[in-house]
Image 1 (cartoon, rainbow, N blue to C red):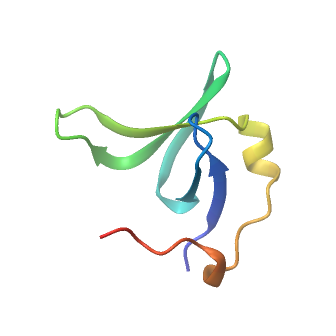
Image 2 (cartoon, rainbow, N blue to C red):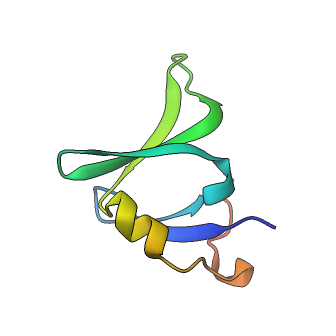
Length: 74
């Protein structure tokens, strides 16, 4: 079962991240970059997401219950 955590995107919106698909997390100035395993953008670069929480905050967060995770977008 996936381990979901609800984080805050740099624009203030909420995003649910499947932590089992994360390759690494790194802090860059005042944002944290989350890079996904095997993810590639249309331009061929790695697929990542920028959030406000620090890596330590993310690691300490309790995971969401599966029913709490946001539904997938179409």
